[in-house]
Length: 260
Image 1 (cartoon, rainbow, N blue to C red):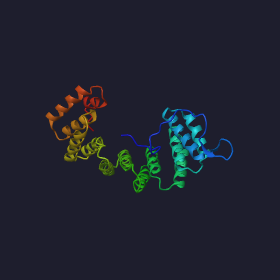
Image 2 (cartoon, one colour; image 1 turned 30 degrees about the vertical axis):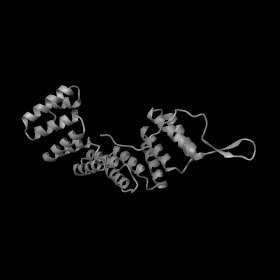
Image 3 (cartoon, rainbow, N blue to C red; image 1 turned 90 degrees about the vertical axis):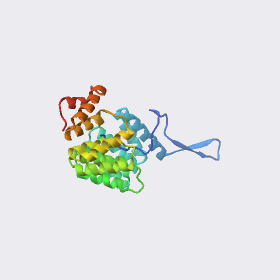
Image 4 (cartoon, rainbow, N blue to C red; image 1 turned 180 degrees about the horizontal axis):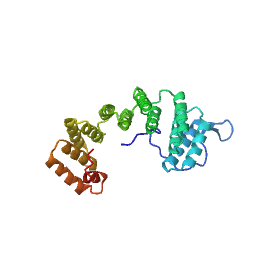
């Protein structure tokens, strides 16, 4: 399961280049109109360009635009958050953390920044610090990305080997967004590991109600059948896995009998 980053609160569409910086038009008593430089608008344009370049992995152009954005708006918490993400991408973790902290010093209640900082810390295996950042994010009353952050917290807890917390956070992620039906597969996996077979079966049924069968769902049915010694059920789901997803990693797991 991937970790969710937030870069901006809305989807951005922008061409890859601009011919001039943002300006605002003001009325003039003389002939024509005068234009005045708009630093906030120019910074927003630069950030949008930087995100375009980041998606294309053009790191040089991304940095140049972020540098300009900070030049125009040196106290903008969102710019520091995006810059922190840039430094993650280029594996400069010390600088990334410095920029996350700068962003939070400017805006200490920005849930998006806490979410991204948590994912950053989790990737560094700093699990307790990551959890603290995730919890702080969901505590912000106006935050709308609660489900994603709970899922991030669950993924991180699972990486840390803290199954009880992973189950707890996955459940909360699902309750905040029932459309994340794939989370049932993560819950099923953990419940099978914990020998909570009735709960795992319910997770798999809930997944089936909203989603199509895939290699992972069949694999968890196979694991559950193996754990509960249901030979006929195991053969049924194994046959479907090998027929429908013969080249999948889960098919290889089955052929190697790697149930755990």
